[in-house]
Amino acid sequence: MKHTISVLVENHAGVLSRISGLFSRRGFNIDSLAVGVTDDPSVSRITIIADGNEYTVEQLEKQLNKLIDVIKVKTLGKEEHLARELMLVKLAVSAEKRSEVMTIAEITGARIIDLCLTTMTLELTDTYASLQRFEQLVRPYGIMEMVRTGTIAIQKGAETIAPKK
Image 1 (cartoon, rainbow, N blue to C red):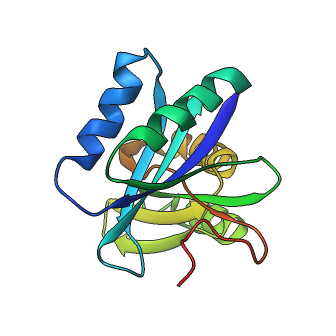
Image 2: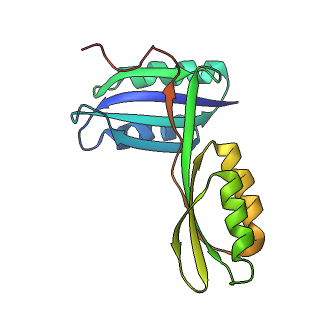
């Protein structure tokens, strides 16, 4: 089962290495990893998507909490968070097929961010599953290049992982 783990850490060199090393030493695979600074430049937030059972995630939380630079760890339940991922995809699109791709973009909420005679680059931010469906829709038009971010997630409602100020 996939789990979303949100980790607040001090924004120092080497923190990500120690966290990924923890996963590596214990033989856990990271499906997705996204790191970014928070509203406080001295704090970064790491969002990890990992596969495992409840016991595995509980052990990971305990081990992460032991690391010096870790401020807070929270596993976000499936129904208690919002998650998004960004995809940029460059398609080899002829002029004859361009309107078809534009229709797909309009229906899916993708934005055309670059257009030239032989290619079209689209941007889409959505859930992992929606990006998978979008990729299947545009694949027949000829994907030249595609890049995706890792998943980022935030807790629903008024509760927050951030320390109280």
